[in-house]
Length: 447
Image (cartoon, rainbow, N blue to C red; front, side, top):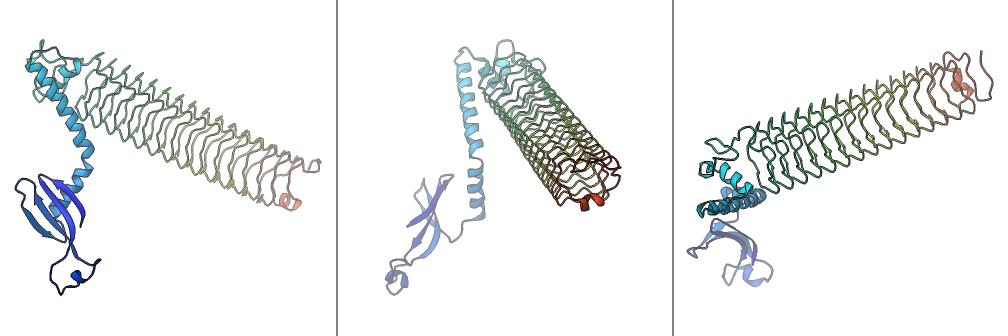
């Protein structure tokens, strides 16, 4: 009974159980017990069959695995070869050629046979295209997988629904280009100019966009998962609903970019500049935002659980209703930030600057706030139960109705703070420093 079989290079390999045929053998006496399983090879041309053994040769195993892995590339190559065959046939019959067919012939080294030379001009190796060769060309739906287009001028080109996977586009000029719904997986766009380009719905998985110019580009609903966007300029770009999980955006420029509902899970945004960016309902869980600039950014309802925001600048940022549970905000600057009803449970905020911040109704239970500066912050109705506020400065803060039960207020400065209606014990207040002028829960003022 055959239990496995496959074909490679005109040979069929199959594995089966066998009965030896000896009358006294146990395999002849039992219905379920047989010898093997053993591998055999069948030559489909000569019909010759040969015994291999219990294991396949290493070379056969490697070839079988590689064929399965390379099947998508094999299929893509077949499509390109058929397109090449069709273009060559039309050239041989002296028939009219479409722009994609002319490009296919040019990249195969047949540019000299075209009227006016190769449009675009291509060198003797049939790969490197010269400048201005594809300016405003219509290449909709073309398959250019793996092609080398480094440094050429492709401004205003139409490459919508095209396949440019693994293409080399280093330094290419693609401003105003139409790349909607195109496949750009693993393409190399290092130093490329994609300003004002339309990449809506494009697939850029694992693409290299290091130091590329994507200002004002449309990347909405695009797939940039695992892409390298280090030092990329995405100023005012549209990235709504884009997938950027596991992408690298170190030192990237994203000022005033629209990242509404974008997926940035586990994204590397260290030292990135996101001042004024829109990140409403964005998924930033487990993201690395150390030293990132997010001043005036809109992070309303953003998911920042377990995110690392150490030393990040969030001055006047809007984080209302955001989820920052267990986030790391050590030494972050949140001065005058809006954190109304934000969830900061178990967040590490030691040394954090929250002066003048709006924290009404925020959940800061079990948060680490030692040494934090909360001068003049509004914590009305906030939950600070079991929070660690040792050495924190809450002078002038509004804590009316706040829940401070079991919070550690040792050496906390409360000068001028308002604690009317707050849930805090006299024992807790006794451990604080600088209680001058505070309004205590019973409404009286200390002197």
